[in-house]
Image (cartoon, rainbow, N blue to C red; front, top):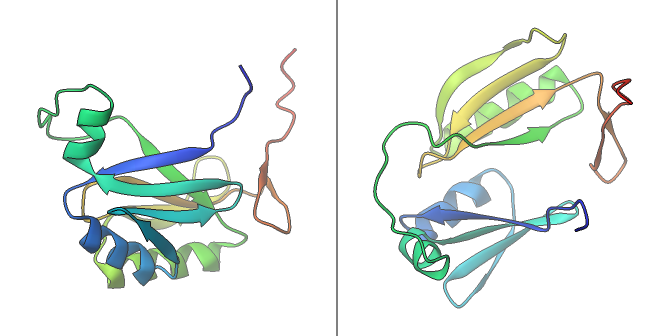
Length: 144
């Protein structure tokens, strides 16, 4: 199997509300049959009705409550950009769960949840390279 992620689909309660939120961050989506697609670098972020996504995956959607164990992250080029993105998210309706601050790894990051509770980290990590198109290149961590 190739080591790649092509799409990340977020199950949302209200596709229109979710689209409005992400477009409030400056993203531009395309709606097809009640599903919204955003080009996000080399992959796509998709918004789809939570019940439809669960049904499509053959999963019973029982509300678990609390943290679902997944966080999405966007790495940016500077601490100032972290501040700007988190502020834009809050203006668009996000709940800031951890204001931007210096991290244990020498970077700078903040967290928010979107209107459906999906957790996002916005981070500047000086140890990760961002290419001109925004792709992330991991460093060699020195493991064999």
